[in-house]
Image (tube, rainbow, N blue to C red):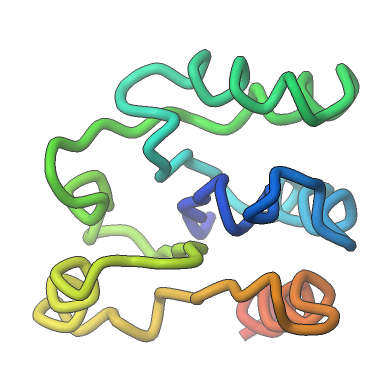
Length: 136
């Protein structure tokens, strides 16, 4: 199963901490299709911190679903937590240049999908992209 690394701010929440259009459909799909991992400042070793943060915004139904997302641990760069031996995709709104460089050095920069919630239908288009990746 393909691993999916998931950021929170700018992906599952807008900059003004609202739920973006299409987030429930996206979550239903990725949780059913991918082996999901948190890759966010809200999770460094313990998934509970991500769930606690999201509890201010998400329903208890979705918080339960999100408990299946596994924690990651990293120090400086999020890319430290990625398992490069596995097939993966990473969803983030603003990766550092150094993180992009780390991916490029490993030849997997194409596995990073930059999410821009300011674009119309951002998560709906992301869902289409992920479905095509999963079917490839």
